[in-house]
Length: 398
Image 1: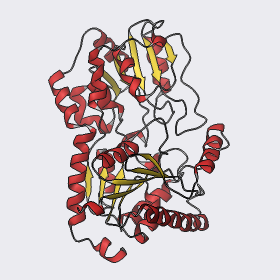
Image 2 (image 1 turned 90 degrees about the horizontal axis):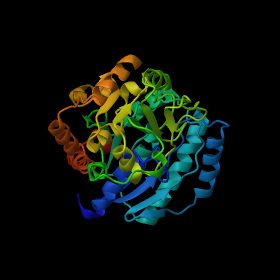
Image 3 (image 1 turned 180 degrees about the vertical axis):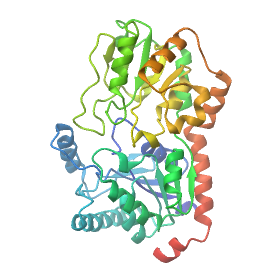
Image 4 (image 1 turned 90 degrees about the vertical axis):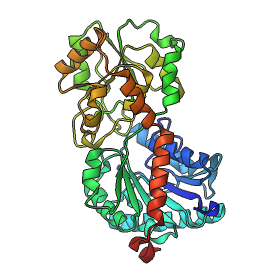
């Protein structure tokens, strides 16, 4: 690809300044570090807003950020927060959103002198824009089953994915279920699971100082890191395991209700400690002073296609991992301790505390294969191969 063509228009499902970074922000940074210029488009609001304080705060925050000029947030990365109405299922509103978004994006690309960028989208609702904005190719990176997320219109997502498929050159997915779901829809679908910052999480082995807020919490400790929302976390399982293991203490590190305002908090018990969110760079310090990393995932349509980002992070830290058995983790079952029920979950924790471990060399090899840089190299290579092929979609719509 010519240097002048190394431009990325990235449509995210998370605002750039969301404190809990996921694929979208990490991939934007990787593209920027590899010489691409990136225009990062904040979330277009797939979930219908509620009157919850969290949603109201986000709406007012978006109003303040909706400037007509791109804002540079990192070297080679600019951010735009377009104003759209979060009611994409209504035809008239969708047409209005498409017109507003098309005007904003074309203006931003003009200001940044980005000609024919590669469009990398994490949301399917930009199918119309992908078909009309001049580009060098369209890539859909599907990291969740958005249609199974709370508050999102599943029919809208399925219809938009079909429309997006007509103008997409390649699609990447992070779980086998997503691969099976989207292979009949998109021409080229590539599977590559979620990954981790191995260098960051291996800092656990350097024995960082114990965080102050852990000093009064007895051991053994179970560490959970992530969004504490009911559609992702099984609070009933946490409660039951806490009852079965009263001398084992849960450290819950994350934001309650992320992606699901109104979520009732985790159960309240003497051996369950809700610590709140912590900066990403501080997470290894908490893992370093835990005994077991846990994934008490809920079992539903959303988690059936979910590959938890924290899975490889946990493994890279060196802690043994006990998790609800999830479809996405099936091929990695030899690396962790799976459980179907709360009783099995508690039994696996007892086994780990008694000394049970998985093959450390196998875990190390898998973690090194699934780093951000390794995945970026795989994705970029496949993406450029696909974009170099003659494409009927590209010929007819661009």
